[in-house]
Amino acid sequence: MENVLEIYHRPEDSAKPLVCVDEKSQQHIKETRSPIPMTPGMPARYDYHYTRNDVSNLFMIFAPLQGFRHVEVTDQRRSIDFAHICRDLVDVHFSDAEKIILVCDNLNTHKPASLYKAFQRQEADRIAEKLQFCYTPKHGSWLNMAEIELSVLSRQCLCRRIPDQETLKREVQAWQNRRNQQRATVQWRFTIDDARIKLRRLYPSTSD
Image 1: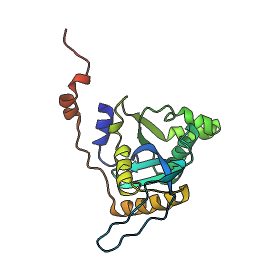
Image 2: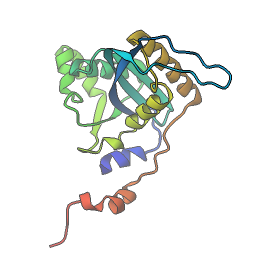
Image 3: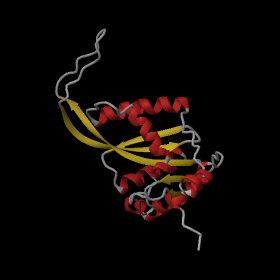
Image 4: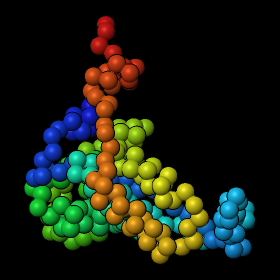
Protein backbone atom coordinates (compact mmCIF):
# COMPACT_ATOMS: atom_id res chain seq x y z
CA MET A 1 0.00 0.00 0.00
CA GLU A 2 2.71 2.48 0.94
CA ASN A 3 4.45 1.76 -2.34
CA VAL A 4 1.35 2.93 -4.24
CA LEU A 5 0.97 6.00 -2.03
CA GLU A 6 4.61 6.93 -2.51
CA ILE A 7 4.21 6.68 -6.30
CA TYR A 8 1.12 8.89 -6.21
CA HIS A 9 3.07 11.72 -4.59
CA ARG A 10 5.95 11.75 -7.03
CA PRO A 11 6.18 14.78 -9.34
CA GLU A 12 5.18 14.34 -12.96
CA ASP A 13 7.90 12.73 -15.07
CA SER A 14 7.19 12.42 -18.80
CA ALA A 15 9.92 9.78 -19.09
CA LYS A 16 8.23 7.63 -16.43
CA PRO A 17 4.50 8.42 -16.57
CA LEU A 18 2.14 7.16 -13.90
CA VAL A 19 -0.70 5.15 -15.44
CA CYS A 20 -3.56 3.42 -13.62
CA VAL A 21 -5.56 0.63 -15.27
CA ASP A 22 -8.81 -0.98 -14.19
CA GLU A 23 -11.87 -2.46 -15.87
CA LYS A 24 -15.60 -2.97 -15.41
CA SER A 25 -18.39 -4.75 -17.21
CA GLN A 26 -21.38 -2.97 -18.70
CA GLN A 27 -24.65 -4.72 -19.41
CA HIS A 28 -26.54 -3.55 -22.49
CA ILE A 29 -30.21 -2.77 -21.96
CA LYS A 30 -32.71 -2.42 -24.81
CA GLU A 31 -36.06 -0.72 -24.45
CA THR A 32 -39.14 -2.86 -25.08
CA ARG A 33 -41.31 0.22 -25.60
CA SER A 34 -40.43 3.65 -26.96
CA PRO A 35 -39.79 6.16 -24.16
CA ILE A 36 -42.14 9.13 -23.86
CA PRO A 37 -40.04 12.29 -24.29
CA MET A 38 -40.01 15.13 -21.80
CA THR A 39 -42.72 17.77 -22.13
CA PRO A 40 -43.28 21.05 -20.21
CA GLY A 41 -43.98 20.12 -16.59
CA MET A 42 -43.46 16.40 -17.22
CA PRO A 43 -40.17 14.44 -17.15
CA ALA A 44 -39.27 11.83 -19.72
CA ARG A 45 -40.84 8.46 -18.99
CA TYR A 46 -39.49 4.96 -19.54
CA ASP A 47 -41.19 1.60 -19.24
CA TYR A 48 -39.74 -0.51 -16.45
CA HIS A 49 -39.61 -3.54 -18.77
CA TYR A 50 -36.39 -4.00 -20.71
CA THR A 51 -34.39 -6.63 -22.60
CA ARG A 52 -30.86 -7.67 -21.70
CA ASN A 53 -28.63 -7.46 -24.75
CA ASP A 54 -25.22 -8.97 -23.93
CA VAL A 55 -22.35 -7.44 -21.92
CA SER A 56 -19.25 -5.44 -22.84
CA ASN A 57 -16.07 -4.79 -20.89
CA LEU A 58 -14.45 -1.38 -20.43
CA PHE A 59 -10.74 -0.98 -19.76
CA MET A 60 -9.89 2.38 -18.17
CA ILE A 61 -6.41 3.77 -18.86
CA PHE A 62 -5.92 6.82 -16.63
CA ALA A 63 -2.86 9.06 -16.31
CA PRO A 64 -3.86 11.39 -13.45
CA LEU A 65 -0.86 13.73 -13.62
CA GLN A 66 -1.58 14.41 -17.28
CA GLY A 67 -5.36 14.58 -16.99
CA PHE A 68 -5.57 11.89 -19.69
CA ARG A 69 -7.78 8.87 -19.96
CA HIS A 70 -8.61 6.34 -22.66
CA VAL A 71 -11.42 3.81 -22.43
CA GLU A 72 -11.18 0.67 -24.54
CA VAL A 73 -14.44 -1.26 -25.06
CA THR A 74 -13.93 -5.00 -25.56
CA ASP A 75 -16.05 -8.12 -25.69
CA GLN A 76 -14.26 -9.71 -22.72
CA ARG A 77 -11.59 -9.06 -20.12
CA ARG A 78 -9.30 -12.02 -20.64
CA SER A 79 -5.56 -12.00 -20.09
CA ILE A 80 -5.11 -11.57 -23.85
CA ASP A 81 -7.28 -8.44 -23.78
CA PHE A 82 -5.17 -7.00 -20.96
CA ALA A 83 -2.01 -7.81 -22.93
CA HIS A 84 -3.26 -5.77 -25.88
CA ILE A 85 -4.03 -2.88 -23.51
CA CYS A 86 -0.40 -3.05 -22.33
CA ARG A 87 0.87 -3.01 -25.90
CA ASP A 88 -1.23 0.07 -26.64
CA LEU A 89 0.23 1.77 -23.57
CA VAL A 90 3.74 1.15 -24.86
CA ASP A 91 3.22 1.75 -28.58
CA VAL A 92 0.35 4.25 -28.78
CA HIS A 93 -0.48 6.23 -25.66
CA PHE A 94 3.01 6.60 -24.10
CA SER A 95 5.36 5.68 -26.92
CA ASP A 96 8.00 8.21 -25.82
CA ALA A 97 8.22 6.92 -22.25
CA GLU A 98 11.33 5.16 -20.98
CA LYS A 99 9.30 3.24 -18.40
CA ILE A 100 5.58 3.25 -17.61
CA ILE A 101 4.66 2.99 -13.91
CA LEU A 102 1.54 0.83 -14.14
CA VAL A 103 -0.79 0.69 -11.13
CA CYS A 104 -3.38 -2.08 -11.17
CA ASP A 105 -5.05 -4.49 -8.77
CA ASN A 106 -4.17 -8.12 -8.14
CA LEU A 107 -6.55 -9.66 -10.67
CA ASN A 108 -4.96 -12.78 -12.11
CA THR A 109 -4.94 -11.30 -15.63
CA HIS A 110 -2.94 -8.23 -14.53
CA LYS A 111 0.39 -10.01 -14.77
CA PRO A 112 3.36 -9.90 -17.16
CA ALA A 113 2.51 -13.55 -17.92
CA SER A 114 -0.51 -12.30 -19.89
CA LEU A 115 1.87 -10.79 -22.43
CA TYR A 116 3.33 -14.22 -23.17
CA LYS A 117 -0.13 -15.67 -23.75
CA ALA A 118 -0.89 -13.02 -26.35
CA PHE A 119 2.44 -12.47 -28.14
CA GLN A 120 5.60 -14.21 -29.21
CA ARG A 121 8.37 -14.14 -26.62
CA GLN A 122 10.40 -11.38 -28.30
CA GLU A 123 7.38 -9.09 -28.52
CA ALA A 124 6.28 -9.90 -24.97
CA ASP A 125 9.79 -9.15 -23.70
CA ARG A 126 9.80 -5.82 -25.50
CA ILE A 127 6.51 -4.73 -23.91
CA ALA A 128 7.37 -6.06 -20.45
CA GLU A 129 10.65 -4.15 -20.48
CA LYS A 130 8.74 -0.85 -20.72
CA LEU A 131 6.33 -1.61 -17.85
CA GLN A 132 6.88 -1.40 -14.09
CA PHE A 133 3.92 -3.12 -12.42
CA CYS A 134 2.76 -1.75 -9.08
CA TYR A 135 -0.11 -3.63 -7.41
CA THR A 136 -2.66 -2.40 -4.93
CA PRO A 137 -2.95 -4.73 -1.91
CA LYS A 138 -5.62 -7.38 -1.57
CA HIS A 139 -8.97 -5.74 -0.73
CA GLY A 140 -7.30 -2.40 -1.50
CA SER A 141 -8.43 -1.77 -5.07
CA TRP A 142 -9.83 1.58 -3.86
CA LEU A 143 -6.19 2.75 -4.01
CA ASN A 144 -6.30 2.51 -7.80
CA MET A 145 -7.21 5.93 -9.23
CA ALA A 146 -8.55 4.24 -12.38
CA GLU A 147 -11.35 2.88 -10.19
CA ILE A 148 -12.26 6.44 -9.22
CA GLU A 149 -12.33 7.49 -12.86
CA LEU A 150 -14.53 4.49 -13.70
CA SER A 151 -16.93 5.72 -11.01
CA VAL A 152 -17.05 9.12 -12.71
CA LEU A 153 -17.72 7.40 -16.05
CA SER A 154 -20.56 5.40 -14.50
CA ARG A 155 -22.21 8.48 -12.98
CA GLN A 156 -21.80 10.79 -15.96
CA CYS A 157 -22.24 8.44 -18.91
CA LEU A 158 -23.39 4.92 -18.07
CA CYS A 159 -26.26 5.67 -15.69
CA ARG A 160 -28.89 4.97 -18.36
CA ARG A 161 -29.95 2.25 -20.73
CA ILE A 162 -27.38 1.71 -23.47
CA PRO A 163 -28.69 -0.87 -25.96
CA ASP A 164 -25.55 -2.21 -27.70
CA GLN A 165 -21.77 -2.06 -27.91
CA GLU A 166 -21.65 0.38 -30.84
CA THR A 167 -23.76 2.90 -28.93
CA LEU A 168 -21.60 2.34 -25.87
CA LYS A 169 -18.43 3.08 -27.86
CA ARG A 170 -19.86 6.35 -29.22
CA GLU A 171 -21.07 7.53 -25.83
CA VAL A 172 -17.85 6.62 -24.03
CA GLN A 173 -15.78 8.31 -26.75
CA ALA A 174 -17.74 11.55 -26.34
CA TRP A 175 -17.32 11.42 -22.55
CA GLN A 176 -13.62 10.65 -22.85
CA ASN A 177 -13.00 13.51 -25.29
CA ARG A 178 -14.74 16.01 -23.02
CA ARG A 179 -12.83 14.91 -19.93
CA ASN A 180 -9.51 15.02 -21.78
CA GLN A 181 -10.22 18.51 -23.12
CA GLN A 182 -10.88 19.62 -19.55
CA ARG A 183 -7.72 17.79 -18.35
CA ALA A 184 -9.91 16.56 -15.51
CA THR A 185 -8.04 14.56 -12.89
CA VAL A 186 -8.15 13.19 -9.35
CA GLN A 187 -6.84 15.27 -6.46
CA TRP A 188 -5.28 12.49 -4.39
CA ARG A 189 -4.83 13.53 -0.75
CA PHE A 190 -4.42 10.25 1.14
CA THR A 191 -0.78 10.00 2.24
CA ILE A 192 1.48 7.43 3.91
CA ASP A 193 1.14 9.36 7.20
CA ASP A 194 -2.65 9.15 6.89
CA ALA A 195 -2.45 5.41 6.27
CA ARG A 196 -0.28 4.84 9.34
CA ILE A 197 -2.88 6.59 11.49
CA LYS A 198 -6.21 5.57 9.96
CA LEU A 199 -5.20 2.06 8.90
CA ARG A 200 -2.77 1.23 11.72
CA ARG A 201 -4.72 -1.94 12.52
CA LEU A 202 -3.54 -3.34 9.18
CA TYR A 203 0.15 -2.86 9.98
CA PRO A 204 2.10 -5.71 11.63
CA SER A 205 2.66 -5.22 15.34
CA THR A 206 6.21 -4.43 16.45
CA SER A 207 5.49 -4.87 20.16
CA ASP A 208 6.92 -7.81 22.09
